[in-house]
Each structure stands twice: as C-alpha cells, then as structure tokens.
Picture 1 (cartoon, rainbow over the protein chains, first blue to last red):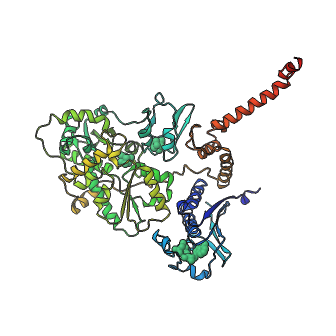
Picture 2: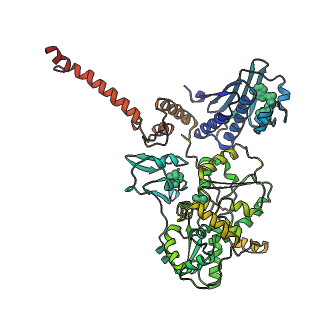
Picture 3: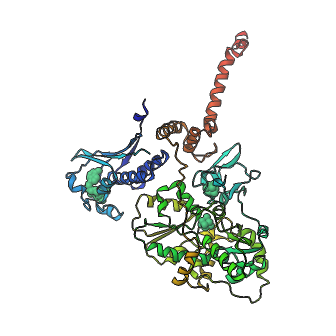
Amino acid sequence: MKDGYYSIEQVFRIKAWDFASAGEASSQIKKILKQLGIDPALTRRVTIAAYEAEMNLIIHSVGGEMRLKVTPQSIIVTAEDRGPGIPDIALAMQEGYSTAPEIARELGFGAGMGLPNIKRCADRLNIQSSVGKGTLLEMYFDIKAG
Amino acid sequence: MKEYYHSVTLRKDKCRGCTNCIKRCPTEAIRVRDGKARIIAERCIDCGECIRVCPYHAKVAVTDPLSSIERFRYRIALPAPTLYGQFKDMVDPNAILIALKKIGFDYVYEVARGADYVTAFVKEALKDPQRKRPFISSACPAIVRLIQVRFPELIDNIVDVDSPMEIAAQLARMEFCEKCGVKPEDVGVFFITPCAAKMTSIRNPVGRKKSSVDGAISIQEIYGPLYNQLSKLKDEEVVQIASPFGVGWANSGGACASLGIDSYLAVDGIQNVIRVLEEIEDEKLTDLEYFEGLACPGGCVGGPLTVENGFVAKNRIRKLAEKARGKPVPEDALQAVAPKIQWRFSEKILPKPVMKLDDDIVEAMKKMETIKRIYETLPGLDCGSCGSPSCRTLAEDIVRGYASEMDCIFKLREKVKQLAQEMIVLSEKIPGGRKETERQE
Ligand SMILES: Nc1ncnc2c1ncn2[C@@H]1O[C@H](COP(=O)(O)OP(=O)(O)O)[C@@H](O)[C@H]1O
Ligand code: SF4
Ligand code: SF4
Ligand SMILES: [Mg+2]
C-alpha cells in the first residue's frame, strides 16, 4: 500500500436524545487527532464541527452514525442519520434558524448556529437530505503539509 | 538535562508498586515497572497529585533546605500568601513576616504584593481587544505546563504577564539593594513555597530565560522554626504591605476577585481545570473574559507542601485578607516600576505534544491501528495491575515499546493456561509418558 492512500476510520453510533453521552464522539475525535499529531488549530476546527453535527443527530434526528476518516492529506467527518430529513437546506443553513424543541432550548441548544458553524470550520461541506429518509453531512478538512 | 528537571520525584525505597498514583496523574506520566513507580519526565507537569495520593509517601517534592540560604551574604524571603493561613489563632501576617526575619532572612517581600502588581499589569493587558479571549491566568505553573502538554491550541490565551513570584523577586531585590547599597549578586532570593511546580519553575522557567528566584523552601520545612519564633515576638515594625486582594490570591478565585471583572471563571483541582480547558478549546465558553485555573484543591492553600488542612486555611486566608494593610498598586507606582523589571514573558511558550504517537502522520496512523487491535484483545477492566493506568494506555505502551502484552495479568494467565495445556499434550507424546504408563497397566 502506498503511504498516500493509507487511511484510518472510526465509527461512532449516536442515539437520539441521548444527552448523557452528548459530545462523546467529538471528544473521541479530538483525542484521536491529538494523538496523530494534527495541527492544533485544525484539530480545533474539526472538533467544533464534529460536535455541532453530533448534537444535531441527538436533537434533530432519530439517530445515526458519525464516521471519522483520516488520510495523510485530509480529515473527513461524516454524520448520517435515518430521518426525518431537512425539508429546506438553504433555510436550515441560515444563522439563527432552528426548529429545536423547547426542552433542547432549555438545555442551552437551539441557537441555530450549528450548521453555519460547521460551514465556517470545514474546508468543504456537502449536505444531502431527503425528507422521510435522512440526512448525510460530509465535512472535509485539508491537512496542509509542513 | 535542564529541560527535564522536576521537583516531583520518586523515593524508590518507599515505593511499594501500588496503582494509586498511576490512575490519578493527569498526563498519564506514571508507570509501575518491576514493582516500582517511574515518572516519564517529558510528561510530568509537577502538579503534585501523586504526592497527595501516595499512601507510602514515596512521591516527594524536592525543594531547597533552609540551610541553603547561607550560600548568600544577604537573604530575602518571598513568602507565598498561602503561608499566612498555616497558623492557628489567626496570627497576624505581619508577625509571620517578622518571624521570617528572625530565622535568618535580612528582608521579606510578600508575594501577595507581587500579586498586587500582577493584577495591575493584567488589568492593562485586558484592555487590548486584539488579544485572544478568554485570558488564562499564568499564576499556576502546573496549569501552564498542562496547557503545553494537553492543550497547545490554548497557549496564546495564557496571559503573558509573569507570576507574582517572579515579579515580587525582582521588586524585592531592587528595593533591598537600593536601601542597603549592596550588590544584587550578593543577595539570594528564596520563595517560601506551597508547591513543587513553583520549584520546577525556578530551575526551569516557562516564559522567561532565567528565574529571578534563587531557591525555594517548602512551607513544611519552615513551619517549625517560624512557629517557635512567633511566640517570642514583641511589638515590631510593620512590614505587611500587600492589599487584601493580593493576600486573597492564595485562594481559588482570588486573582479573579482582584481584577474586578464580571465574566470570569475560577476553578481549582486539576481534573476540574481539565474539564473547563476542554470546553474553552472547543469554543463552548465564548463570552468568558478571564479564566483562573489552579491545580490544587481550593487553590494554593491546598498545595502539596502545606501543613494546615486546605479548607481550614482557605477560611483563615479569607478572614486575614480583610485585615491586610495595603492598597492596590496605584497607576503612577506601576508606571514607575514597569520599565525596571521584566514583568512580561520574554520567551514564547512552546507546545510539548507528548501525547502524539509519531512525528510522521502515516506512522502515527499505523501505530493507532495497532493500538486499537491490541486494545480489543485486552480485558477492558482498567485494573492497573500491568502498571499502566488503563488498558488503552497499556496498548499504547506496547506500541511505543515500553511494555509487552504479558504485563497484563489476564493475558499472562491465558498464556500460562495455554502453555499448561501444551505441556499436557506434549507429555502424552513422550515415550514413557502418562498415556504409555496407562496402557501398560
Ligand atoms: N440531522 C438533522 N436532521 C434533521 N434536521 C436537522 C438536522 N440537522 C439540522 N437540522 C435542522 O436544521 C436546523 C438548524 O440546525 P443548526 O444550525 O444546527 O441549529 P440548531 O441545532 O441550533 O437548531 C435545525 O433546527 C433543524 O431544523
Ligand atoms: S506531579 Fe502530577 S504530572 Fe507529575 S507524575 Fe505526579 S501526578 Fe503526574
Ligand atoms: S495551585 Fe498553587 S500551590 Fe498548587 S500547583 Fe498551582 S501554584 Fe502551586
Ligand atoms: Mg445544531
């Protein structure tokens, strides 16, 4: 195997409304990146984006999976769930837009800044969603040489 | 060599090889190998957690003996404000300062007064809107080192004003030399320390080339001689000049209170500090202006080299601070001393990414895969019998080449069982072995 194609992957299962383990996947991701010696500023961006995606799975979805993939050139974090999907992605991307229920707001979530934050942190972002089926969020980060 | 000087060390003769310390160390710096604990020098931040938890007193902080002050013609004592809370009956801090003069010091300068100056300098720094928020206090060297090791992304948040100890040392030497007309090199400045981390910072400073302090004597060592003097004191001159705020720095929250800002957070105990630093790193505490993290429970009053119960001392400091005689440092006094001392860090604080598996990312990835594979074969009990703090760290140690799978007692038992089984099978094959004998019967 050529080094350039070497990659590692880690999968995290995320349950809906599981606030007790909220943030565990993203803190695992942070730990892995620190051990790999990824630049601290990049590690921070990935962790912030991963945390927002994780919370969205917990609050807005019926549950799903997060996946971390690292290659020597890039870090890819995906968050995939099995519903309910986002009807209007452009609207969801707007700062301050949120459909978070009251209980989530009481816990301090639902500021409508998650997706905009993810966009700010990731080098590239891809969202696919279909109502009734689910949402796939792919966050790409470039590892700069040096 | 100098890079890895540590005050915290192991007394091998006292170590029984238990697992208390390995589990408590915040940087996973301790392993038990061949029945004795060992500290991985690159990782240790001198927080003193292992000193507190060792039931056999095998972990110690090396400080200077009181007799070491004799190296110098003139000696200055720099008592940490924590010292004031160590004596029963609410002894006046002024009396403690006088007692220091009776046991061999020519001059005393309160580190609490240094804290008053630090407060004034930090207030200036806080006015700069360009600086990264939240500011993180640089007062506790164990926390500064923790950030180097575990939170390198937060290095720029550390406020670059030096510690009360360093500032007090410079002011003390300057004042004394001016007053008495002596040469600075004839004067030894000694910090009276509640902790190991400060001792390490004197030998191996972070943020400056060389410490202005010549040595550190532990509160535990100086307590007896001071106590004896206290009872003999008559009416004496007044030398206590620090403000209530400066004295309050001994307690967690003291630094924040003196800054007079709204949005601050003061946290003590290293594990608690780690939790908050994680949140700051993840940008979850965005409206925070200032963070004071102290490694010891309750703040420096809970330092590992103190005598009095930290909770009692904390309460005492609170009451004593109210009676402190001094005022905060006025603007003109600050401007007058600022050019004469080095109050700002001169050296960049560098990250020490000791947790990373390899400098080469592909190698690091390969090691991580191997760690994962090994980890999955371990029992997952985190019992510590192998000498590593958890199954995960044993897997890491194996990959880093510091341990073997057979250090795990469960693995070893499996292996022994398997070997025993093989022995039986083998013995059956040997002519004259068990099977043969049975057949003959
Ligand atoms: N995984 C998801 N499944 C369904 N809807 C989602 C998902 N993630 C985000 N959304 C929708 O997008 C909105 C905006 O998300 P976000 O910017 O993270 O803000 P917040 O989580 O604070 O509501 C959410 O309120 C929700 O309506
Ligand atoms: S002083 Fe702190 S960092 Fe150093 S070995 Fe002891 S517990 Fe670990
Ligand atoms: S809290 Fe105070 S006593 Fe404890 S390590 Fe930090 S500076 Fe030393
Ligand atoms: Mg969100």
